Length: 356
Image 1 (tube, rainbow, N blue to C red):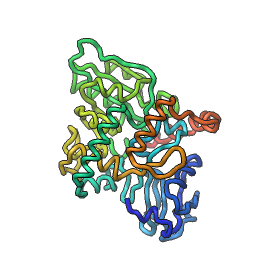
Image 2: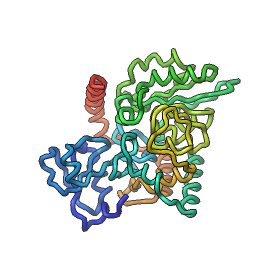
Image 3: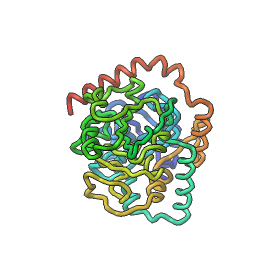
Image 4: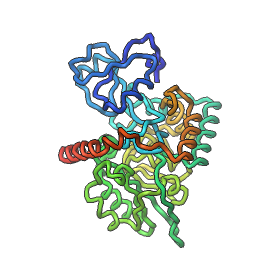
């Protein structure tokens, strides 16, 4: 991440197509540089620094003529769902691509391919990893129910569900693109295991559409769990199989074997079993090198209190404190807008499903 992006002398950031509820975070994220929002590409002049969300497409000529940076939620995000408009503690900014797009390099991939990680940085990464695991933190930190490993189960395999219309599936999942197809493949590979399926929390909350024929999940697994914290499951299962879910990274932090049926950012570095090896990757990296890149060097963390930049360690402390307080509650704006946001998300999910 180049310091120039956060240099006030570098001029304004042109933000294209950002939802209104992301705008205050965007302003804090790039402070003290000014941010100007535009809705049409015709309003962007050549030479601008253009910020877009995720894999939002831009005209090829604009990509060539402007400096494009892509933003997404970081991997330690909040106590609550982004779909509920809960403000994030971390975003990532990427000038090459974006971490979930396996079709082209990203800044995170470049770090893992080329960065020389110092001993001090790796020791810091190890301490951060241990603190995250000890605190039981994950990306969203949601779930209120408990779960107990079945007595006598010799091998418990967790399969996390995803929102099938997300860009991470289109750009990183390869041939296998549905939760049900993944479950079928994992059942065939692990016929004697106790297979546990956890739907995506946005789907459980009704904020996104379930996957194609996802209601048939129990025909291909032994148990479906919904409102259980991911950390509690990871502590008790033996291994994880997934498409591109961040759960695989969270499992690696806890020393669990991970099989990737897609190509998430943490695959291809010798830490996972990869069904489809990644052609650009192949350098072997340690777990703490992965942690240093993904949780220290790549994201930017903001205080939930005043929007100031904080360290990843401070972000962990803030997440622990928020969880102890019962988590972030959706504000009045979220409660008022939730039906509309849910309807719009369902319409968008349906349109993407028809296209793809």
